[in-house]
Length: 292
Image 1 (cartoon, rainbow, N blue to C red):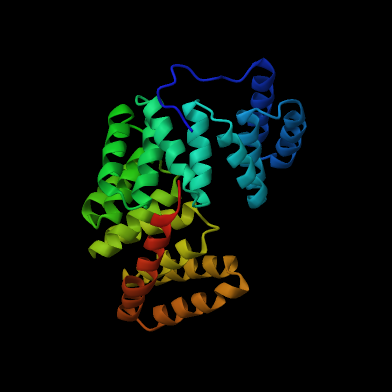
Image 2: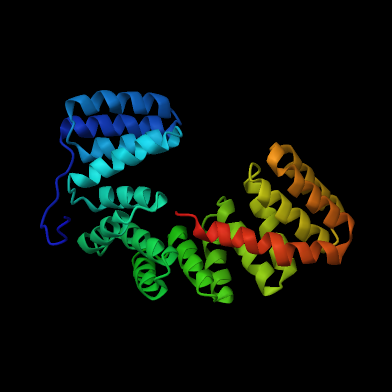
């Protein structure tokens, strides 16, 4: 279906480009409702535009309209686009739905644009989560050579290493990602979880606390930080994190918050056992599996 040997790919025409630029401005302002309305109107005039379809899919996904968004991405791919940026966007979107066509889209993007770090990184990230770690590493290392300062490439190399059980190497790459992008709480949390698995609780406390503060709406991050801070003897900070978590907890999460509170009150070893044996491993598995 997709031809990686195509010498050129269609770019948006002037009318499409104007629509997409305005949509981008709305997206930056978080105005997804307005962006979606504008794109739906544009689609009536450009029903065969993969650009408008894919951006509309992005907007509808942001609005929680997952099923409709999925159909937009499928329609965009069916139009056989050859733009590597568009293919990467659509491929990443389809990967979130576990659609097997995601692989072809991402592979084709990487073949069309082998000198593009984002396309190589996206394909490598997909491969690592599908268990093809050797090929994933090849793609991600190629992306790193192209863009050594890109924190996402370092993060995804960390994911690949962690999935392969190379936790020291994973910690190195997660640390690089966090250093390059200090406001990325996700990178700090993955770094902290890697340090927990390696038994380095002081380093884990530093990274998990930072990740929790950068991501105040992340309940699990607050609870991870509370446990590791309690292990470090920082009771006041641990209780602060626990209360921050309690404020975020939905009714379904209250049992977990109480469990963490009981473990902290049970002393250092009780907190350590729950962190190391239960919460940190489950959190690491979940976060590694999530698509970029």
